[in-house]
Amino acid sequence: MTVLHRPPPGKYRLTVEDFLRLDETGVFGTDRTELLDGDIIIMNAEYRPHGQIAGELHYAFRRVLETIGNDLHAMSASIRLSAHDMPLPDIALTREPHGAGPVPVESVGLIVEVASSTLDRDMGQKVPIYARAGIPEYWIVDVNGRVLHQLWSSQSDGYEHHRTTPFGARVTAETIEGLTIDTTSL
Image 1 (cartoon, rainbow, N blue to C red):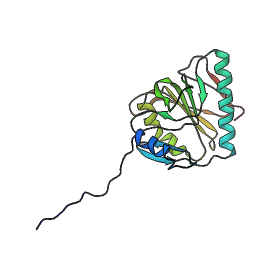
Image 2: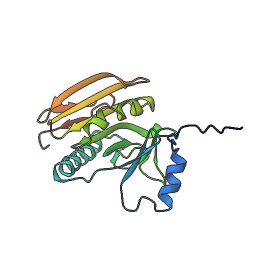
Image 3: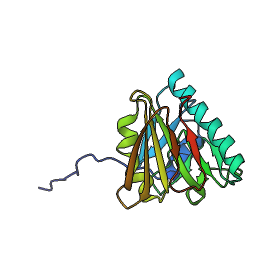
Image 4: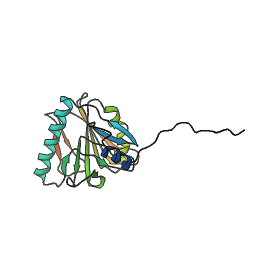
């Protein structure tokens, strides 16, 4: 007698191409989504504390970058990091704001995630993803803890340096000369 052995059900890891095809067909509707480690993440609703802080930071980055004459632009757009990762950060500083499709990873100088309900993911799963992709500097703004985590010197599994700054202080980027943000308005 022949016995068929079926492998146990497994998880399928989507590629960015799979994810983009699904998005183009309208599968996600109006949901904001990102792809992390091949998994589709439906993003949480954003409320006023998150929106206010993200807006203040976006404005501050734009103003400071113009003042120091840096060609980086602050925007929120999907970034293609690898074959299985395409996050949608709250703010990305990129040298290529124009064009179609996701922002190319090599154009990104700094990423900011504003975390009101996603701190575990932003401080956990996303750290090695951004580091492996070579993102030079990553900031996580902890809305509830009222601090900004600044990570830089990317390595294969994370970042070599981590500094925590309370709201109300000035934060100076370690990888972008002249970029200092005042967090008083946060």
